[in-house]
Length: 346
Image (cartoon, rainbow, N blue to C red; front, top):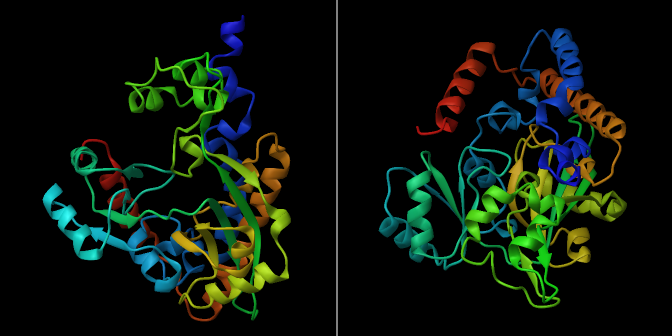
């Protein structure tokens, strides 16, 4: 019985934050469909961010979206087109003044797929063996705090607001001087369900006894699917923070609705907008504070309903100002391209 209670199935079943994306989003289908009927467009959300393909719901280039952000607010980011070689990637790094470690991520992708922290040329070679689409080389932002900050501005209004802040706690274990790394991983639910990837990444250290109070950060990518804990930091929202992100967002042409994935040195820097934006996500991004451990699924669905209501209003107001809705035919072409690029073994 103890084995059952410690199984990945039971851990996921009893904590809705681990449930498949489609289950959480299922009630939202009816909201989306109702608004689609009202606008006579299944892709009405595409008008939410006029400068981003599909508004940021599907198929947009991460590099092109980040290119909209002022240089002072983002790390050095370079697009690498395939085919390429390790030699060429390292040459591009030197030309840009980049040194290891760096971040590599696909230009098209979501939910942490193929985002890697790269330490050396061997890691680049391994990445090139796996990646099948164009990718991004990005400067590692070595700042201690990482957040997801959701911003909304209705086109009819002069100012926007932040309505969600997610703090990110990276997956880690702390030694006690007795247990080895494998034992430490398997005794933490959030780490245990990542066992397949962690056992491969730390294959040569699993039997190592971790000294007392030694903390090992197992995953350094702030994605929920990779084991990062998402924490509700909405208590940080105030007039100062709203004003800071309003100023930033108005510098980004055609951006009204989406989430900044960022790092900063302190909470004061966050309030002042002294940040580094690693990714700018459009309307396809969630207000991810809903995944705070122990949070109510009913409240989460309520947040998502409000989220889609806001998305509809932003899209409709932009449409009334001349922004067209993406046609179904155009949407099909984008979907086919995404499906082809994301398919395993392509």
